[in-house]
Image (tube, rainbow, N blue to C red; front, side, top):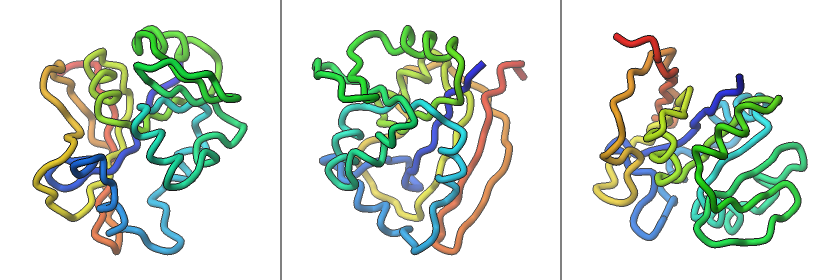
Length: 180
């Protein structure tokens, strides 16, 4: 069965964005030729689930081709109906129903790229199978928290950690559904 994999960056104090959805703190760890495993990660996915605010930010800052490379389906989770654009689908329904449907279909794994509302809705429904969390060496103090209250406890299995010259530390966990 296909897995949902979270691949996301956060500040050391747990924020994925500063106020006003500002992601400029990510520039602190930009380094020529370093993608922190992103290319290897995305080579094993063919579907992306992403929140509308994150999608709009990336399209504005990087361009639509970052997601729409013609080789994967992109589901933008939104409250406002928009027309689909090629393999980019704007989804307003129940995220659990969507994930259940996608996971049952043949294909590669599914990449959750945020934002926080999408991540936490997936966690509430125990739908994330693997987490790659890159910690940027900064304390932001406020902004959008990666993990919100109101979701069930979930046991994770540590797989590995990797450090980089920029100070970024990447943690990789799998969901442990076998219990304690």
